[in-house]
Image (spheres, rainbow, N blue to C red):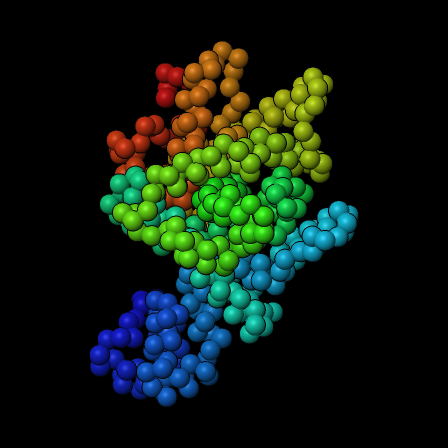
Amino acid sequence: MSHVDPHEKGQTSLIESLNTDALAEVMSACYSLEDLRALIHASPVLYRGFLSAKRTILLNMVEEDLGPGIRDAVGFVLIGKLDTNTSSERFREQIKQAVRRYAALPAGRMAVSSATDGHIIKIIQINRAVQFFARGYITARLYLTQFEGGASNSERLRISCAIIRHQFLTTLRPQGDWKGEGTYMFHNLFQAWEIQQIAMVHSFIGSFSSHFIANNPIGELKRETWDLVELRRNVIAEKLMQEPEHYNIRKQVKDEINYLKSGYFSSCFEESHFFLSQAIGRKEHLIPSGSEALDNFERRRDRLYAREKEMPAITAGRLATDPPYAWVDALDGLNCCRWGFDLVRVPGPETTTDYHKVVVRKIIEWCWTGYAFWDKEHVEALKKKIVLRSEYPTGWAINIWDEDAT
């Protein structure tokens, strides 16, 4: 759908002559709610046309922005925030019910069928915040990597999906706990590359959230700043996100790297135990403790590695729901169910400490440059950039512990 500019002279009378369905299509193609508001207030005819198809027009605009993420937005709004002022047993039951309700939602536009007009308004509000942070994420990545092209529509949709899913995830965790039961249940609904993308936007959003927590000794903002709508207001009020030349993007990335080294992202090593247990049909989440448990984990880990090799190779696609090219390229088509620092295998005993640091730096750089969101043209262009300290040839995550290969 091509966008329209309601401010162009001579367009209003032409638009007024359209039938209702065509008029709804034109209004749905406005760039923003501000443009839509300007258009419908341009004449009584357009305003009446909007009122007759209000729900359809607004949903069309949201779907244009979120793509498959509209399901996630509906789930977030319908389920709402959980009651944390209750027993741990009751809270766990709330989590299970919330994830089940989310999982039961149909894909795409069908998910909106049970939403009221009030829900639609909330979906629009959360989408506005999602697009705000998606633009910021894209701007920072393109600026830092000196990438001349913009983000493609599929790349933008992947980022939007990851941000709204991250927002839903924040409702499923006890305060400050990114390793809780809700996190594991929610992750189990997605492919590994989708969880990788959620983790990557977590570091971006978390760097802003931490600013307000750090500057609020009472801690009143600690929960609210994970709410994207509230966080957007705070970021705008303090002018923390502007055009690259107007704010310190390098400090932003430094803050993000701190997030990548701690909390949610580094918990993926424990998270892998969850994936391992799922891969062999076990339901419990196990963390090795002691030599016997560690031996058991290593056996299951090796079985998972072997199973990944036996699974059919995956291929990249241009749709937001397809495996992104960078993920497929990094793993040379391996159908990997690991992510984060576990995207690469456990190093052998011969690996030196210095080289281990090189590998950690390489994974972190791959993450903060946004690789896991990018299409083929974007990835291949980044590979040629001298601004990146590391190189990422096809299969780098497979061969990373081979110093000669990397």
